[in-house]
Length: 524
Image 1 (cartoon, rainbow, N blue to C red):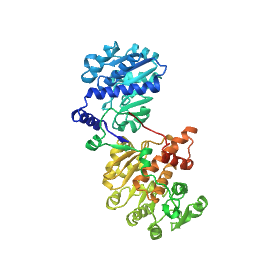
Image 2: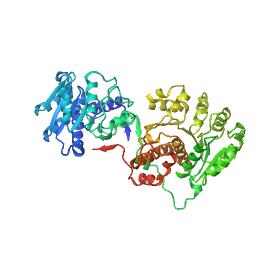
Image 3: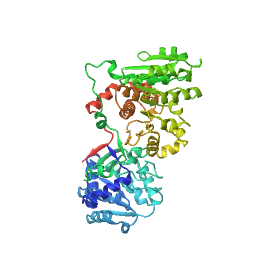
Image 4: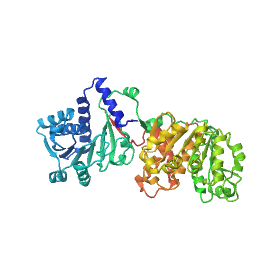
């Protein structure tokens, strides 16, 4: 599903109005009418009291349309306008007047009001139509008090287009922000509804068609895509009856150091579990007895180390002779950051012409050496968390998280590699290509080892002939989906990394059969 920034959405609106000839009042009518229709079907039922909180812009205009249809259906509707009626212009003013023509009640809020608090106390449902997606400054004044009062009411909240107070570009809360149970947005999802914490404030998300013609995507473009089952079914392979283990590739995992043999074990096992025909784990020879005990289906290939369990540059020739004819190299889990190890990682990357999936200490090895990434033409996907990417580009994790999409895009283009920036709504950026946002996952993944499983998933898929982009999209989606399935029957605290392998086959079949969970609804 395509995702837009607020600025691009405004371009779509202008194109529809100026080129396609759709009046702006019709777009607002479509938005408000369909919001009301869907809200009524899902939420109103026996509820009779509706409080709608409107701002002075077009978001408030959408709220007045909702109110008009609710009045017509006999609901008790009370509208609070933050500001004066005389401040409304254009379509917002038009729909305010239409609401009033039906004897709709509007209370102006220019300062904190006990009347507003009492109204919320008796409301069955609240509609938030204060700010739209174009908000860019911190919320303050009466709006801040109103939003805090809405959140404290404990009543279900329906957000019109976006929860008020959320930045439509980044998902940041601009001070106080409404926490909605359900958000109805128009034409396309917005970036700020997918990126946290905006995604948390959004609740359920439904995209409503407002008659913008789809060919506008080709004219104006879009900002990202959200991975969903429909996309994945477009490239998910079926296995032929005559297939054998050679049909699904041989993945090489280079991983492990003292105290971190678990990372090597989990990454290699995940690669095998997700369907690689063969997986060989290249390990320091000192640690081989431990990994031989840990692994059964995964093969090991011990190479020279320093006698203490750390790989050394002198093991390169053995590694290269084994790995050069394999299908993918998974590089980094638990390797450590010893000088010899980091030197070896860079040599492997520059001199072995294979597709790479690089994580953890494999990424850390390029700190201060990103020129190696830029100067070496490799098919590669790096899977950093914000801290790892921050170290590579000499920024703070906070700075990376504040501009996740832009940061991933910028350095993917500069280095010529795919970057899967992990975290809530993982962002996959390809050089010169589309940015993808992953909707699956939850805080149960915030635990050591979960990243090793993800790395193994991506590498195991790549060994089977999926492109690195396809492997990262499918691997990240499955990784998060498994966690989402887990919390339905457990908690968001007790997931262990290896639990992500249980039920993987059922999840893949759900996607193949189209019975997977829908994260963003689309409604006509």
